Image 1 (spheres, rainbow, N blue to C red):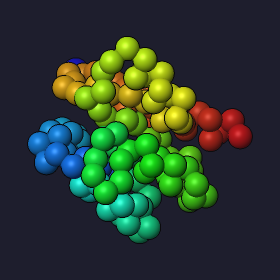
Image 2 (image 1 turned 120 degrees about the horizontal axis):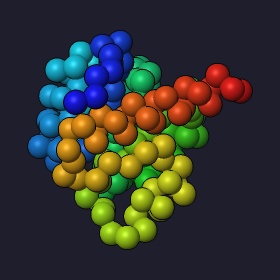
Image 3 (image 1 turned 60 degrees about the vertical axis):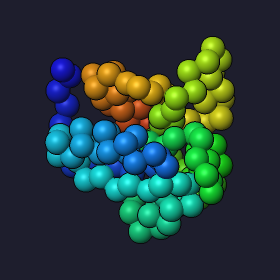
Image 4 (image 1 turned 30 degrees about the vertical axis):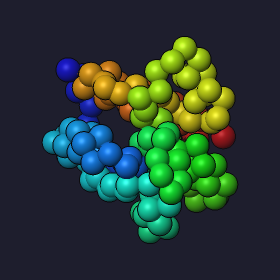
Length: 136
């Protein structure tokens, strides 16, 4: 397994399926991260009013507010505009990854996922966004 220190990270996981929240929550907490969870985009945005996480993991298909709309709101606020946002989704059809990237997500994780691939994508996205911040 890849070993990176995420013990100083705060992560927001937004997904309407409790099992799909619980798995990443357990993995990330085990590695020392602080994890907040929300069951839809509106709830996630309320958390972002008081918490500025290291990254956001968001499902694309949810009731109340889906991941696509949640991303639009996150990008529209100065405080959260540059947060790494990763789509974690069962949308695994050809072209879905391209749609996710075109929409402005920083990464894509298909469900179900392997733990090493999940962690590698998270670390990759955070590193890329941090590099972009340092360059600007």
